[in-house]
Amino acid sequence: QVQLVESGGGLVQAGGSLRLSCAASGRTFIDYAMGWFRQAPGKEREFVATISWSGDSTYYTDSVKGRFTISRDNAKNTVYLHMNSLKPEDTAVYYCAGNMQGWRTSRYQNDYELWGQGTQVTVSS
Image (tube, one colour):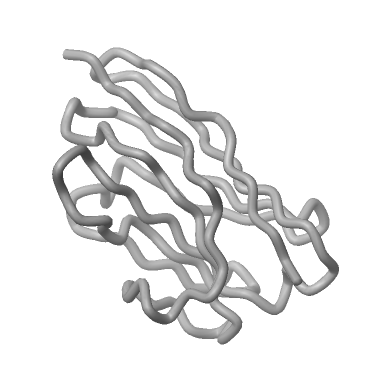
């Protein structure tokens, strides 16, 4: 069973950058498409970005396009979320998730079987 552990969150000023990491245990990481979701206080968890098992296919929610980049290093069993030009509205707990249909870059939470514990990102104005 693959387990996911996020890191890299923190406090940053608006306009700044952060890189989130999600390290996966287990040898089947390469089989999974990976996604990032976030949940702001008082709001439902929402999709941010996803990447296929090979890294060839990515998909972003409109609000982060051009600012966030998802990538993965299968040799290191790690998926990343590079966040630039951060805004206060990006403040949330960020979760990584794994989808066993590795080719499928889905925005739907129900398609993901594995979830990390989350990492807090706070953007100050």
